[in-house]
Image (cartoon, rainbow, N blue to C red; front, side, top):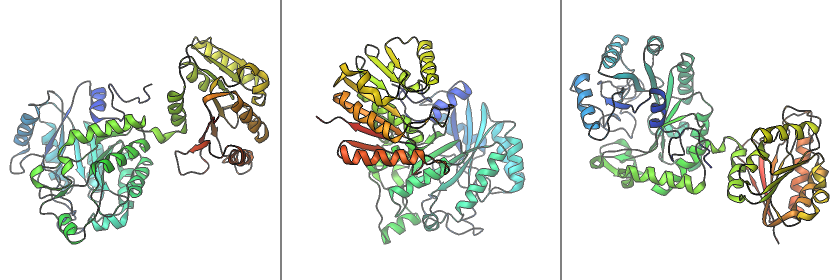
Length: 495
């Protein structure tokens, strides 16, 4: 089953190509330009020497020749790109160094010139969060009403110690405030991050993405740190060697990051693209499409996608997809509003579903939903799930999957909810119904309402029972660090 919304093909993340095609109706090129700007951490305003990983071109290695006017750069870069792809819509990309770091009249001259270039439909401006003045913000807000505008902000990491080491010369607070300022003006924001920065752990790289996931950003560029000749980074590496990520490590980290990111965030870049002549390490980066293919393969192997960790329901569906076959018998032990029953019936087209719920409202809602989708191979019982075995005595060892959603009926009476003793009875009875490959899936909802601890009591009683009676047969899955968030328990039958 295809889970990912933002795809026309087999990609499991929200690609820039997909975004442009659906927004503009055709393929769109970003044409990289070098407008000759400097940086505040290069000229002494904020610091000296620039970021330690930057090349002599200031991360504009594929931009035009700074000695040429923008119009000539545009023509030259476009000529090269058209040898591979064809398009009649372009975004002028101010790439090299800090492209808002100049007097306002200079910025206006550069941007307006680019907008007049043939078939340019928008601007993408790479900059730093500490280099956009109030006057520039006001101009960008006005510019955003006339063209498709994106501001690309370099962050690289949320960790201040690493940020100091790489000579970023701005704080996380500065970055966050600028994102908010841009979004108040409805300007699209794309954030650059780097995996593999000196001495950072995998957990630190994941934390950077978790932080960004909470912000109102529209896109992200994920880079692999590449060490180039004649950079401060290479000097540091020679004096104090640090671990360079292997391709396998990088792929796994990126896939973990994609699983966390909100699906609507556009992935503008997912690997580095250094010039081979200048590259010291890692050498595997020169095979860009190999890295992209490995990311695709790993996501397919995991059967995950961008935003997978957004809801524990995605994990539930993943397990169901792998577990249930078209002729299986399954049970929805808490039908609620019928959505789990419908999902199961879309799979068991030649099998049957048995649904249980104590509330008449739940049975009616489920029956209505299933009839609307022309389902017939099901039977609903308005009774508590603690009567599973009494109701289905002829189905011992025949059921492939049983699903429970603990708590109360969504949008229903919150005082009517599953209880510890009946839930445990239902699980024990359901276990006797499972076939030799059968499983029970239980979504647990710890109660976040401090005045009502029923959910927490049920959770604790359930875990205690599982530890005592099924110690080696259950696994828990969490999609967040929040201890009050719903999570999944998978209980496997063991002969």
